[in-house]
Image (tube, rainbow, N blue to C red; front, side, top):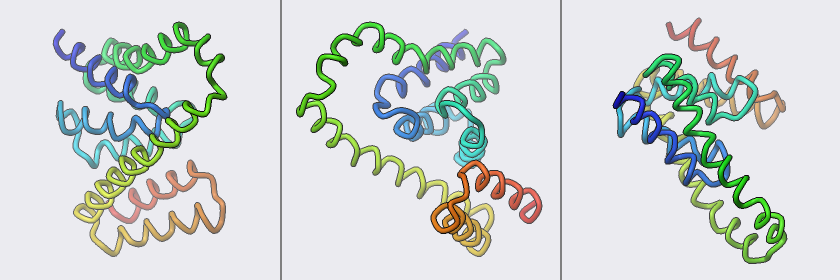
Length: 177
């Protein structure tokens, strides 16, 4: 029973403070899952994140379902998904009129602009942690090959990120195993 409570808290907190959606919530979920409750390693979390990015739909909800299932089965998945969705659901129901009233407010736009750098820093820290884990597990040459090919595929060749992730997973399964 305590495990379900931990799952609920682990996904409720990112759901509440993860302003900006999935990308903003990922470092918060990573902290809860890897560091606080130690359900996964950074490498395992990175694999779940890659898998979640390859599938359609909101990333935080997919990750909550997978991690919740791994920790507590079907009930764990239900608890984690509920905790992820509840803050947004309540906010939408309670604050819908306020959102409509103030959506064009300069103050709200400034507040949003001030939050974006913090989200960028959180994502940069997460990317660095994934790079460090990859470097430790696969070595510098393999990591640089994956980073370079992924960058070229995304930025130069405009390949959809899902295909890049599938390619990286295939590369890891074939070359690194």
